[in-house]
Length: 154
Image (cartoon, rainbow, N blue to C red; front, side, top):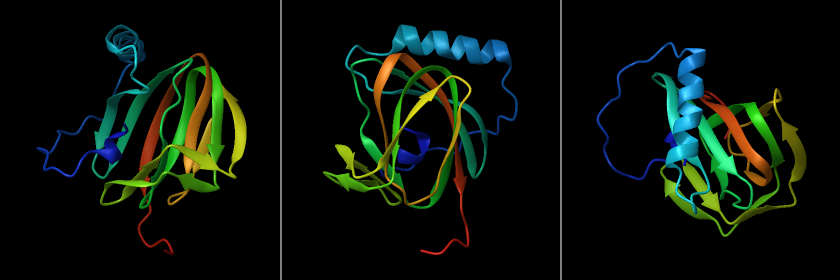
């Protein structure tokens, strides 16, 4: 899962990382391809971090849909690095479970708007909005930026 979805446990603060080269991104993609377990829906790795922001590389494969998610206090900016799939945004989280103090997960999204996404696309998912990745074609590699939205209504 994304860094914003860590279990309720204390983790040591991570050092700032403000640069990742193109070669590092390619190496991170190769690592995801090689180390992802066959039944693993999403292989997630940090690329950058400068608290309270985090940029993650997420690697998904065809045939395994990832759990639906709601980030209650963070918006998420997504850039599709490679591949294609469907991202459904909005609607209602089905099979809702609390992941941690500010995130929910579920089995799917009901009533949302599906959008085919592919290499080069940008997507903005507002905080407190259900979303899910399904129908991956081959592989789907994204960069996700979790952006705390202080002062938002809610």
